[in-house]
Image 1 (tube, one colour):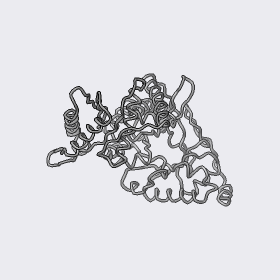
Image 2: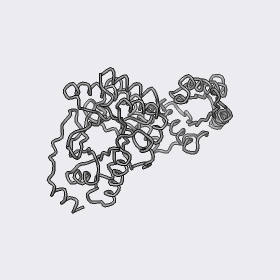
Image 3: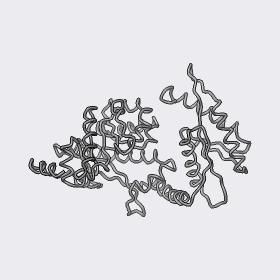
Image 4: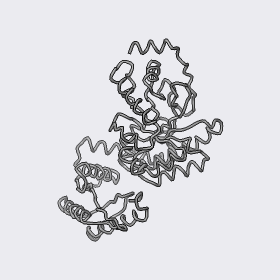
Length: 393
């Protein structure tokens, strides 16, 4: 709605939804906007059956609603996640996580439905663990408790470092580094990804400005979540931070996972095209691990494709992986898109990737993640070494 008709129309739609929600609950119940197009409704002194009846009414009223904007008419749809508050030991964060999980189930069932959360022991343990991580994440956001590391992305032909990928770490207990795979699921569950992305953008661009003062050829690749890409204001935030630090947009690559790209990039095409026109590049991360749709390489302004590491780690010994990597490289070249192979950890793999048509490489062989920018020192191999490796594959 915001992209097609502007923020004023989006605000009018949100106001309409809020009015219908308030009209559908009882006096004394609470309706609050949680963020974006999400609302929270707190029903007091209700049984599960009564709560389900109210939810059914909400879904029906939204289905019957029409939003008129100019000459256009739109259906209003909603998905609802429900959780029951039992006892005093549950926290607000745990309840939000339960309702969020139930809402995801409702969407998976076809949307325009409600779903009541049912907890298994495993799910409850996961929520409790995520609740603890969410507190640490919020503390890190307030106290700058994150750490940025940088890993080089190297041109296979020239051996030059083209970009440095910015990698996020959480400082637990002020000394132990926690990898994103540990704490980001909690960030997603508790709606903290936008704040994390903004923290990374803000601090990475400050550091990039410092590095470029000594070498203005340095460029950063920044990972961004799908939840941020779908917000038009996030693109403005990137522009503002780049301008504040005197960093040109052509010094930035924005990485987004393949799954998030399919879901969110078409909706944000206008903002993306605007940044691309001014030099910023976009990359698809983990390509091949999800949808593997080549069609959007034709329609989206993607400059780089990162081949998922699962096809790279054993590429020297696995003929199928070789064919997959080669196919991705050929199709990317046809779309005038560069390829990056991640998880390159040995010399034989590096040489073979070049023969398979891959443009750039990233991995521990070329430089481990570090708080300092370390130029690669990989020597150019002899011709007979390349032939020996291909002959053994």
